[in-house]
Image (cartoon, rainbow, N blue to C red):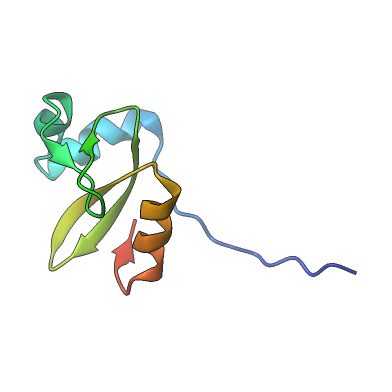
Length: 80
């Protein structure tokens, strides 16, 4: 019998994303394509924004590359 592991995955609804990014001063940079992935430095836009990582009291963005997501979750960062 296969065991099922319960995992808590925090999520942000699309309609709340603009407010959250604005609160952190990132929305305008996202629209102007001035944000880069915390891991690979790829330019972030609304289509490839996949997550956030908090490091040194700074909110950083992660692209949708599976390697970047794995790297972000494997570090001792606080991901949201």
